[in-house]
Length: 299
View (tube, rainbow, N blue to C red):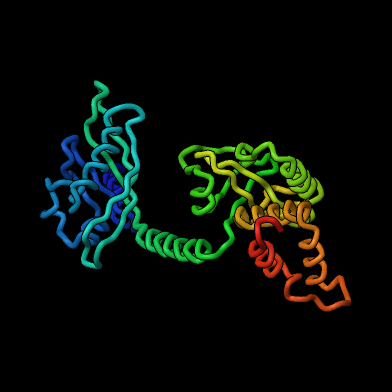
């Protein structure tokens, strides 16, 4: 009588579960299913008896599940897999936790598995992934490129366009952004600013860096970053960079030109409003160069 009461108790525990419970033989055929499994697939227990446990429509997906289930035949004789199956409610995703039952000879006698419906979670993950992709598309369409790094300068997030510019890939693992710096003296000033922001937790003015890509190209970047704090301590730095390589070359060219062409420096000061006298057309940079290159060789 006690045995009968125990059997009834265990049967109630199994049949009243919302999660799916199955028992399969080593060949993968169903020996037992609870009512939740029967309702989920829309078939009677009698019709399911002896059928293949994981019918899948995709051969590739079937191979993945089969690979995971090989763990059931070696220690620790357990595995977790996800399975999309067709149900009366449409395609549903179940997360299965399986454990092997061993006989006295330590061989697999059967496998017991419980399945939990995670369709809602999967759909939410897909929606989040889609939003992330849309956000990344919006971010990548602008001039700025984005990144985050730890206080130790290890790169955490690097936007795809910035990775492409530097020639680095996600598969390289964690690297410091300082690996890409050249020996240009301006980099020392930039590194000092970011270290100061990390130490103080306060934003520093924008600065410029010179970096070398993996293929040897020299790149000038304008950096605008801010420390991210937790309990008053900097935990990471987040910022944006703009490629100013061409602008930097033009600026350096103008500086060099001013050394050899004094009138050009005067024209720039007048245009900037540093003179009360009107600037004649020939004194503007464009007009100056036009007059310079239109002169005769002996002039």
